[in-house]
Image 1 (tube, rainbow, N blue to C red):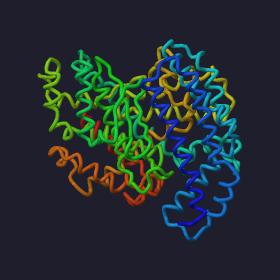
Image 2 (tube, one colour):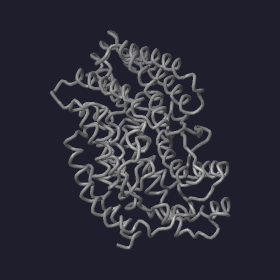
Image 3 (cartoon, rainbow, N blue to C red):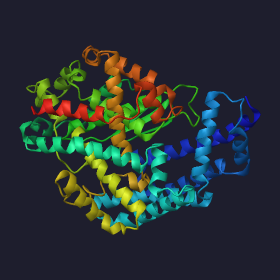
Image 4 (tube, one colour):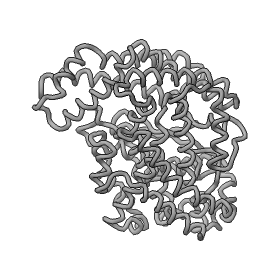
Length: 498
C-alpha cells in the first residue's frame, strides 16, 4: 500500500467512525429517544460533526490528497476513494469546523421544530429554522461556487452528480408531458376501484408480524438488520452488516406499512449487498440518492405491486386478516394497491401521480435557492402548485408544506432523486426483463433471482460507480425517460381500461 495512502486511511477511518456515531444518534432520536433529550443530544451531535470536520479539513489531509490525486501506484479502489475524498474535502472546506458544528446543532433542533410544527399545524414554529437552514446552504454553495454556476446546481450535484437544473428541467418536462394527460384521463375514473376493505380495522400487532415476514421474503437479513417504528419511515446504515429500517403503522391503512416496508427493504438490500472490500470506506454506501431511490421504488412498485409477487403470499395475508380479506380476491387487492388517487401526501401517492409531487418540490427549491423569497410565503406558493398540478388545495400546512422532513434536515436538492429513481428503476427493469422472465420467477416465489441480479449489476459496487456509469454499464444507455413513461402508460391504461 502507498505510504501516503496509508496515512490518509487513518483520517478516513476516523471520519467514518464519527459519521457512524452521528447516524446512531439520528436513528435513536427518530425511534426511541425521549422528548426531553432533544436539546442536549443536538449539542452532542454538533460536537461530533465538528470533530468529523476536523478529521478531514486539516493541513496534513490537504497535503496527502494533493500528493495522491495523481499517484500512479494506487489500485482502482484506492483511486476512487481518493477522488471521493477530494470531493468531500471541497464540500466541507466551504465552512469552518465551528460553522459545521453549529449547522449540525441547528439541524438537530430544526427537526424537532418541524415535528412540533407539523403536530400543531403551525408553520410559524418551523419557519425561523427553515430560514436559517436555507441561508446556511446558500452560504455553503456560494463558497463552493467556482464556475459561476447556480447555487441550486451546487446542491443538486451532492445528491446526483451531473444532473443539473438544465438536465432536470428537460427530464421533468418529459414526465409532465407523459403523466399529466394520463392522470387527467384517469381522474374521472378514480372512484371505479373499490378499496373500502383496506379501511377496516387491521390489528397493529398482526401488521407487524406480516411486515416482518414481508421484509424477510424480499431478502432482508435480520442478522444484519433491524426494523423499528418512526413517524417518517427511513433507512440508515453503518456498514453492510448493520442496516436499519423503520416503518409506521396505521390501524385503517395496512397497505401503508406493507409497501413502506418493501420500499425501505429495497434501500436496505442495496446497503447489505455492497462488497466487503468497500465497507467502512467512502465507497461503502449507495452511490447516489437517485440510485438508492431506484432500488427502493423498484422493490416497492415495479416488483411489490405486481400480481405475480403476491400470488405465492396473498393467502398468508388473507389468513392473518380473514375478517377483512377472506372475500377479497387477489385481482381486487391488486387493483386497490395500484389505484390512482390525486392526494396531498407524497409518501402515500400512487406511482402515476408521485412524480408530480416531486416536481412541485423541485420548483420550490429552485425558487428559494435562486431567489430571495420570504419563507412565510412558501405555504401559499406550495398550495398554488398543488392546485396547478394535482387540482387540490391542501387544507392545512401539516398536509401541505410541513408533510416532509427533508428541509428540516438540510436536504435541499434531495427531492429530484425520487423521480430520477423511478425513471432509473424502469430502465433497469426493462433490461432485467430482456434477460429473464421476471413474472415467472415471482410466481415461483424466487424473489432472490431478482435481488441477485440487482446485487450483481448494481448493489455490489457501492459508490465505486456513479449513476451515469451504472446506467450505461447495466443498460447500455444514458437516462432514457421513455421507459418510465411507457411503464406507467402500459400499467395504468390496463388498470383503468383506457
